[in-house]
Length: 348
Image (cartoon, rainbow, N blue to C red; front, top):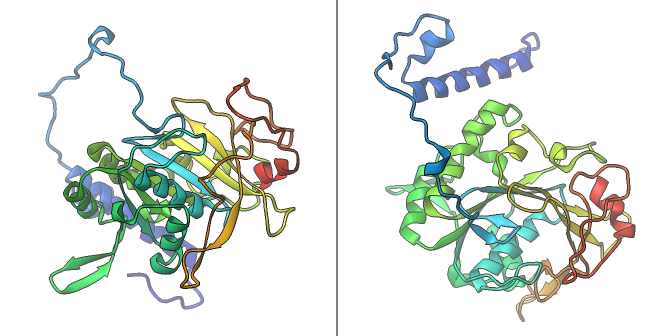
């Protein structure tokens, strides 16, 4: 246990020692060794594995297969996907609208249809009843297909869900529910038991969620923040924490808001990474406050019918201080040179 700060202890060094101890213990458990001896540098006797051999598979024995898309060129099934943005950029509202699309069998931002299915949402920042659910309903979601992660119950005792340690319990709940096509962790950083700025610890922490999505055939969506004071950089480099947050997802989106506009602020949703699809383009969108029913409850949601774009945001996800480059023509989508939202994409 960390000692109380007495004015003389190097507090940051103390925190770092604690983090290292936790990491060493976790790696020790994964490898079946004594973590204390390992941390002291003592020799660890481990079973010899000389009786095994590497299996090489010739390429002729492997059949290519198509990517399993939930939203073609938008979100993949069976892998981790990321939605990042700065505070107030609309990322959680967008996540709620995507969930609404899935549960209601609606349409994606580019007009493609979605088959109705179940979805699960965990929020570690916003309230469910007063924030997330109203946003979901404002986007036209079907409540019967929507489930929120609540408490973890052991007998009569309940405690909050911890994505860093309770992923096996969530896996059992998903299997029991069945037909789950999206699982949202908001924010995804809380799934990391150690230091989310360290590559190895972040990869280890994200792996259980990635394995859950692969095993149940769901699209995993992590909602994440952008780093401060990184305007003008590559969108993937702007993602807060370890580089693993940008490296592991199959698809990554960035939401931004035009800071030069007021109440009816123009926003953009842009592709930052697409492992098996186009890494350019995105969509204009605007959010609005609307009353859900006669109860007077209001919520923020995309303008009806969905996150319909005013125009295709023909821009590279590798933004810099230049004007975004143009993408190849796609006749089915309206053109927009971005103009006033250039700064939103690059510095929002």
